[in-house]
Amino acid sequence: MPRIQQGSRLGAGGAEGELDTRDWYDNLFNMVKPEQLPRPPNLVATVAARLRLEIRGKHAVGEKLATEASLAERFGVSRTVLREAVATLRTEGVLETRQGSGIYVARTKDEPVFRLTRAVERERHLRSVYELRFGLEVASAGLAAIHRAEADLRALGKALAAMDRPETRPAADLRFHATIAAATGNAHYQGLVALLAKELSGLIKEANSAGTDYRRPEVEVLLAEHHRIHDAIAAGNPEAARAAMEVHLHNSAHRFSIEIRGMSSGHGAPAVKG
Ligand SMILES: [Zn+2]
Image: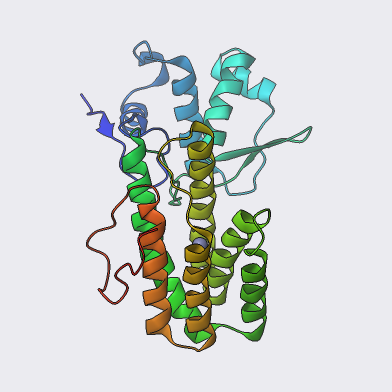
């Protein structure tokens, strides 16, 4: 009997701890003929697994699949079941539906995709987001100090100026970090930092509306942290840029009562606990 494996691959999707039944289906469909199949645990999941296999074996990215009606007929299921199976694959990023046009292959399954799945426990999720941010953004600051162009410095200066006003501050803060990621000249940093920033601003919004675990930073402290990062990048000093980013991220994590441990070089020990 094939084992049902714990989902562990990147791009497996779904909640943490969810069982990945794909390998089970892969094995199953390689071993037995369709007419010998045991009663499936879930019809939608079965159809999704069949489709996934087909896409992996026969289709290329961008290819159009048969119509919903003909797929439903071929699998011998209702259009509702087929639609739900397609929705599952859409959530996984395997398929894409275009209004009025049809179902397309967005990626074949074996390409790894990173998704920021959420831990059930909020504190654990926050900690993982901050640990990732720390690794990415401290490195970004160092790279930006080396690779930044004049246009990057102008954009950083603009973002800083917009942080002076409360109404533009949150968006400008995000822009400041995105600009540093762009200034690395490495598109992957840019993409990952944007992903984390989006997640974090969602968490801050949630905290603000729940009135719980987030302490708003003191404005002068927050601005001083960003000015230090800007000045080090402008001066072309990667060491100072990394240290300044470390201070900012330590303080930012403290606002959520999170302590980032084991990642700091020591140069950026928090100067101000805000
Ligand atoms: Zn910031």
